[in-house]
Every structure is written in structure tokens, then in C-alpha cells.
Image (cartoon, rainbow, N blue to C red; front, side, top):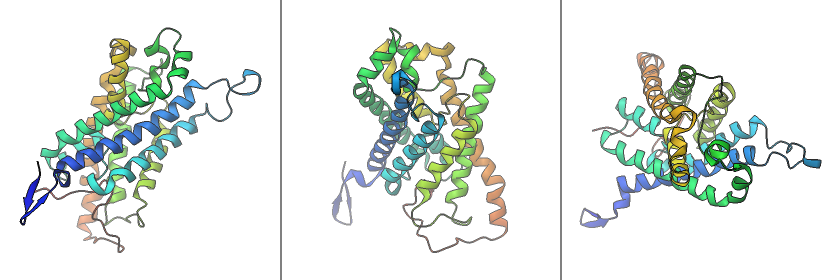
Length: 292
């Protein structure tokens, strides 16, 4: 509902509803570009001369740079409005460390999951021909990986959980280091690019074990879409693996945030570091709103 401020009626979009809408579209853009690059990587494998492997498309850099650019673009879409969490692990970590109000956690996470779900539906229809050509009668097993993550056959439960936990802890801890205005802040609205490169680095170092979800909405939203079109096969895939890219990133993100606060954050505070440069931090991507 609209609110009346100072005698003027303001739109509900000026509050949490608008922020949730920004999270929805930011996450949708993230998944459209991110899972879109996975579709390129996985579905077009023999388009080279005489049926040879497709040049460039089937190499790991397509995945890590594709997801890096996807995160960058998602942040540019929603950063000034919602802070561009576009990841429940980020939202939960910011709330747990009193950077974000708990009252907004539910709307943000719901918007993120819905954005990922809708993006998966769009990609499902855009890539229908390629998906059908590669499904070979078992959609979830053969092309489900376009939409959600899974571990390599030799990676056990502990290894997969640890990989997602560590990757997300690094993600959140380094995001806090990047956006902290006391700690060599990025200037000229380049935070989204730097955070996108952080995704590239995590993918290059820790991505191949599990496909590095490091974002529960990125995995659960598309997995839910595939469940609707496969009768739930996406949730039973890989021995019910689906819970790991939900639980591990949520826990890892919180731990990463606390580690930053208890180490580098305390050092910055102890040294009396002030905000450096002349950047304006209001509306900063993945900003830290005041908590009343």
C-alpha cells in the first residue's frame, strides 16, 4: 500500500516492495546470463568442422567468466535500490552481522528465488530445441546440469559441502572487504565489476568440484523449475544432493562475514581507519543499510 509522508502519497515501491522487486530482477538477470552460458557450454558440443568439438564454447573459462559477468550485470541492475544481494547467503550474512534488518530477509530471499525460477523458465523455452536434442529421454540426468549444480562423481558429500561452504565464505568475506569504505574502496562505481571478477576467481579455484553454486537461489530456483517439468527428478538427482547448495552457502556466508568482522574489520576499527577517497557510499552495491 502507498504511504503518506509529509502530506504526500508515496508509492509502496519506495520501500521494501521496491527493494524486493529489484532483487527479483537482479537475480533474474544473474540466472539468465549465468545459466545461459552453461547452456552454451553443455548443449552445443559438436558444432566444429566435421562434427568436432565446438571451439571455445566448451571450455571452463566460458563458465567462470560467464558467471562473473552475470553477477556484475545483476548488481548493476539492482545495486542502487536494494544493495544487490541477489543471493540469500549474502542477505543472511548481512542480517546476522547487523548490517541488514531481519524484517527484510524473508522478502529479499523470496524475491531472489522467484527471480531465479522465472529466469530458468525463460531459458527452458529459449533453449527448448537444444535441450530436447541432448536430453535423450532423461531430462534431469542429461541436461538438468544446465539449470542447477551437481558434484563430480568422485566428490563425496563432505567434499561437496566443504567446497560450497568455503566458496561462499570467501565470497561474502571478500565482498565485505571490497565494499568497506575504510579499506581501499573501489571508486567510479566499479564495485560490480570487481565482485564479478571475484566470482571468476572462486570459479577458477574451487568451481569444478560442484559447479560452485555459492548461492542457494541460483541452484534452488532453477531446480524447482526443472522439478515441475520432470515430476521432481531434479530433487532426487545425485542422491538428493539438492540440500547441499542450500545449507552450505547459507552457513558459509555467515561464517565468512563473522571472520571478516573479527579479523580485518577489527583491525580497521583499532587503527581508527576513516573512509578513504571521496566516493559516495549511498546506494553502493551490496551496501550495508543502517539497522535501527
